[in-house]
Image 1: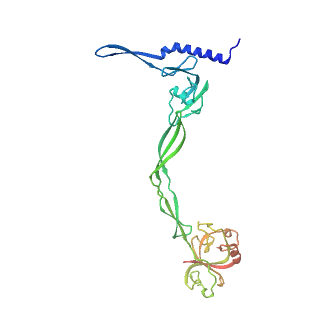
Image 2: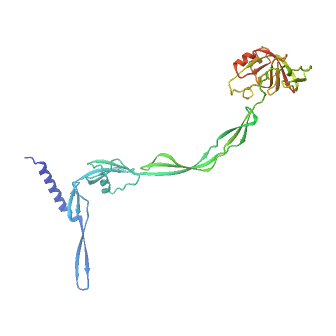
Image 3: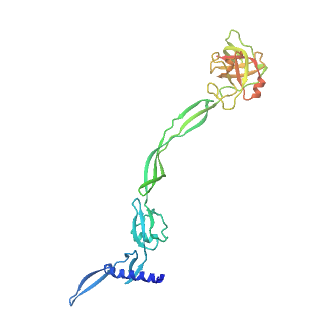
Amino acid sequence: MGITENQRSLVRIASVLSAAAILWTSAFSVSAQTISDENSSSTETQVSEESDLVLPNGDTLTSDNGEIKITEGVTVDIKVGANDYKSYSVPKSTVKDALDHAKIKLGKDDTVSKSLASKVKNNQKIKVNRITYKKTVKTETVKYKTVTKKTKSLYEGQKKVKTKGKNGTKKVTYTARVVNGKAHTEVVTSTKVTKKAQNKVVLVGTKHRNYAMYEYNPTSYKTKSSGGIGTVTDHNGKTVAYKQVISGPATAYYASAGAHTSVGDTVHIGGVAVNPSIIPYGSKLYIESPDGSFVYGYAVANDTGGFCYNGSGTVCDLFYSSYDACCQFGRRDVNIYVLA
């Protein structure tokens, strides 16, 4: 004949109480202390109670003011840090109570695989991660920056280093999160500059190398001297000496703003392309038509082009800022005066 669930519970409680009776003797320690006075001597026995005694079936026997309490127990496996799992018999309560019963203390940054408020289950696995933080301080270089400043003391396209750059230094604190003895993500937690970097300062020229192109003024045109060395009167009526004059057809070209010539100058009105084997780069020039109907004005030889090699006979290519201006100029004869 089978027994009911209530009968089974009664049998279990009887078994537990029987075990408790057998073990209760070991649950108390008895010490005798003799108390004497002037008139008599007597012996008083004090009994100290130990709680949280785990019974053979996994239940927990406790004593509270002389009353015996039996708490149902479970077996859990707990892994702490890098250690292996270890079995513990603990009260069937919360995860926090289980850790306390197993005398496992948690650090302020430690984590647990289960919620501390959750109920423990038999044969449950609980993992405690030991979390610490490691700081490392390193000295690193602060690279200098390069800044530019415009100046009229230099021509367009020219540059000059005013101040050399110098690197600085800084102390950088890195903090690594250490989980169970192994370092993980490292982040920068503080930076302190110990020596400031000095910026490199570069001056960039804004001064135009030449005058702008001028329109023809009949009163400004004068004849030149013969013999290859002489003077010419410019559009302002000023007499200018030249050491060579070259005559021939000229064309015009243009380029986008900021483009550079063969010598590194930024393209601008007054810069002309020449055959450098005839007119050296950097030569100062004055250009106008032979009959004075056109004046390009003062210029500098700073570029070259394919006309030097195509046999067209072109002596120079004048820069203009637009395609329409180039078309207006077209192709016409000029005198190129190489100034002395």
